[in-house]
Every structure is written in C-alpha cells, then in structure tokens.
Length: 202
Image 1 (cartoon, rainbow, N blue to C red):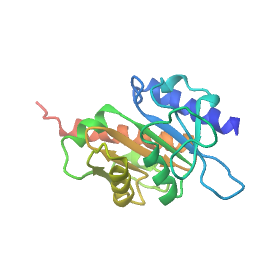
Image 2 (cartoon, rainbow, N blue to C red):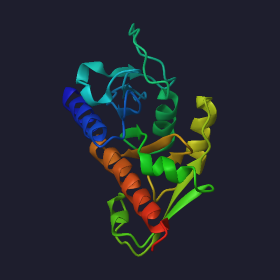
Image 3 (cartoon, one colour):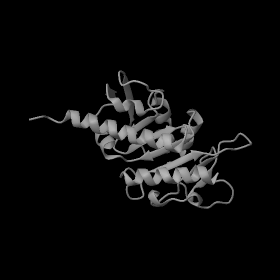
Image 4 (cartoon, helix red, strand yellow):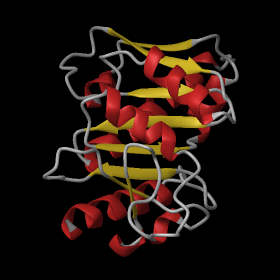
C-alpha cells in the first residue's frame, strides 16, 4: 500500500516540477485494493503543495467521496469527479492539473481538440500509430461537482484517457499513477504542438 502511495506522490512531484500543479492547484488519486469489493480511493488533500506529498498525506475516501473512518482532513474539492471516473472508467489512477497550453487551447476551441498525425499521440495507451485522429473533449467548467462529473463521464472517448475543462485544466487517467501522469503530460505536449501550428509565420 505504501509503495503505491509513494508512486502517486512521486508522480505528483514530477507533474509539479513541470508546472502542471502550480501553487496548491491540481490533485491526484489512486484506487486502493479492497477485499470487500468496495471502491476505496487515496486522494490528495486540499490546499497543500502537491510537489511535497508523502504517502501519509493521502486521504482514503469511499464511493460517496467522503473520508473513511474518523479522518477529519479535507480531501480535494474535486474528489467527486475522481470517484465518478473510477466508477465509470476501468482505471487505477487519476491526475488533474492545470497545464498552460491545454488551458489556453480550451479557451480558443469549440468543444474538442483534434490531434492528427503527431508522433506523440502514441503516448496514449492503446494508440500504436501516429496515422490517426485522436479527439480530446472539452467540457464547460462548473463549480457544481456533480454537474462537472457527469459531463466528464458523458463526453469521454475510449481512445483518449483525458478530458479538458474549459479555462481550468485536464483530468487524465490510466492503469497506474505513472500512466495517468504520462497521459496528462501527453495532452499538454500535444496541445502545445497544436498552438505552435496555429501561430502565423512570417
């Protein structure tokens, strides 16, 4: 268990070093093994530097997104969305960050970003060639986490393990903390390429 949480903390530190979890923003989580078959998630706490997390910092929450037992610490405000993804997607970890190129592109696009013919598309699990299109859905931001969670679940597509929230950030998921983290980084890298291609040339 501690090894899994150490992996999650390490990926949070890596994403923080890339500038995706600036200030105290962003959050990460991992599905924990549970012999009773219930959903148990280790969630990052609210209002802390995600680059300095250690295994003991993570808060265990159940399927109702509330802390288990007598833990009185406050998990991330976006715990509900993480839990909804675990309930509807076969994933083992979720990373949410605010990568700047992806956020900028979300403010310039309609309801999706299309990636086509870019080698780095193969960094998405299950994509084996650049000769394809991959669509990143854009959903509208909301302070109502039930509404935001429903939109993320409804708009997700099988080929891209991520959704982009307009003016906010990216939720990415994967089988492991490392894979979810890689998917978040992949989205940002691809969005940067799309923005660079949109720049006028002299």
